[in-house]
Image (cartoon, rainbow, N blue to C red; front, side):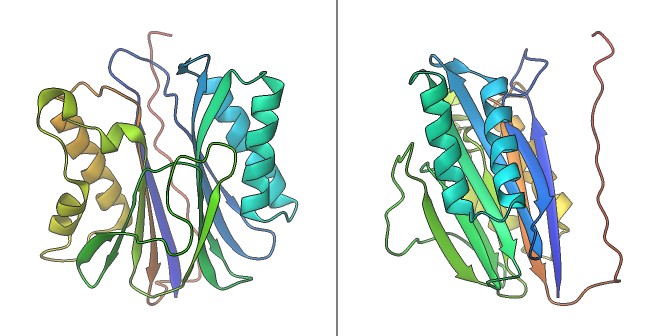
Length: 236
C-alpha cells in the first residue's frame, strides 16, 4: 500500500500573494497530515492569520496531540489573541498509521469529494452535521480503503464560475477525470484547479487550493518522494 498526495494552488486575480496556506508533515507515530487554512482579519483576507494557524497546528500534531484537540486549541487562541477580529477556516486530512484510518478535521461546510471505483461523491458524515463551527471543529474518521481518493478544496474552487453564471459542478467534473483511466494525484489536482480558473474566465475571484490524497494498492518502490513547483515573481 502507498500513500500519494498532491497540492495545486493559485492566488486570486491581481494578487501576488495567496491567502490560502497549506503545509504537510509526517506524523510522529507514522503517516502524514496536510493542513490548509484560509484566514481573515477584521473581515479581510489575511495570509498572516492563515500561516499562524497552519504552523501552530503542525507544531501541536508533531508534539503528539490529536488533530481535533490541536485544531480546537489553535482556533481558540487565534480568536483570543486578536480579540475576536480574526477568523480561520481550517481543514486537516491525516493518514494516521497509529489508528490505521483517514482522519478529517474541519470547522467549515466546504465539502470533501471521495472517489472509489471511478465513482465520485461528496462524503456523508455520520454523527455531527457539517455546519459552520468556527471554534469547535468536527472530526471524522474513515477506514483506509485501497484505491480511494480524498479531495479537499478551498472556497475559491467551490465558488468558481458563480459570478459568471457558470458554476463548477465539482463532483461531476471529478468523476469525468476517472472515466477512461486513473490519473495521477497531481493530474487530478491540476485538472480541478485549471477547470476552476477556466470557470472564472481565467481570473480567479478568490484564492484556489486543491489537495488530493490517494491510498494506492501497492507501492512502486520503497523510496519516498516530494516535489515542489514554486513560481517566482521577478517583479518583486
